[in-house]
Length: 330
Image (cartoon, rainbow, N blue to C red; front, side, top):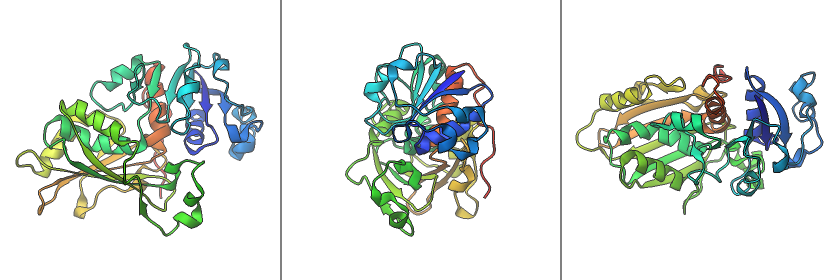
């Protein structure tokens, strides 16, 4: 499969490049990145010196000229992909890792483990990758909402992301000196991922869902931890929560259900460099609230890993192709 990557110089694009080069059936034949036009991939990524892909020259994105590409990954900031991707030839399949096409007519939402999505993704030619925060939060909550174990209204999501989640083109206040030894909440007046989360949960519940979502930036390179709180419907214990998740994810290759040993949930580092998601559940004994926790790599299951998983389905590959490596330890 001939693969193109738009935004190859960014965090998500460079992770896509790494995964594509290790993929058994993908060959990167096109790369664009506005800040690095004219450089070879080996100049941008020295590890590719001597590798055939390293000779590829990074170009300025010209949507009409990618008809030689079988599948195009677009990793652009939200608001930057809608217009140019509309000019990509119809024969070229697209996975948009950015936020412009989630729940847009003509585009398929690409969180594979949701009910019925795998079949839809396999037929898609225009695929919208989920947001990084929604990927973690929805995978934790979906089985509980679908089984009617929790109230879909008033769900609270406290999520924390590493600095790569801001993108390589982030503002100067996301630099090392500003983020090291610091922690802050943002998006308090609203976040772009809220409509995506509420729409998906509403579809699963069959009724309107509402969430209070607060993201935080933490001083680590990569990873997302999403802690979700919801009111139970009737009396619940932790075993019923895990039973619902086991039913939903029994045969899912990238979902790992882990017990909350000694009251501790999953760590972001468990998923680092992988497409895995680790999920734990608990019932708070004092408030009675259900607690659902998920840990992912924001550049893995939250971006490039999920994009490769979707592309595998769209092109008839083994779903796990190129994604079977273990996480980084430590």
